[in-house]
Length: 125
Image (cartoon, rainbow, N blue to C red; front, side, top):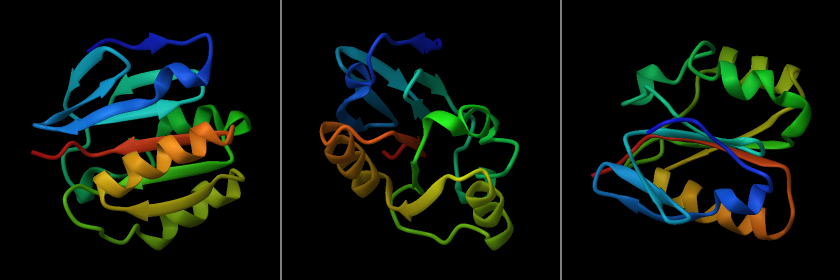
């Protein structure tokens, strides 16, 4: 999947997830994904250990456009390391960590509320 720039964040609603990827609108993407108010991007994180300061660079670059970041950690919820959470919060990004399914559903709710939300979602089978 290639980067997709969007005109409106509503274009980034998650239609479905599972089977190793996501459907954003009518476009199917394989693998993990980063979603920001400016678009959605492939993400090379395949497990919790891959969720790092470097892997979230695109999120950090758009910090001024994001109030909350949802991180979907795969099939099960896992904790984010303290240093990474503190670094994101220093960029004024609130962070909420949960399973990918819960993060996808929460993302759509916050998006519908007009919130400036981003998501970093590890793909699930």
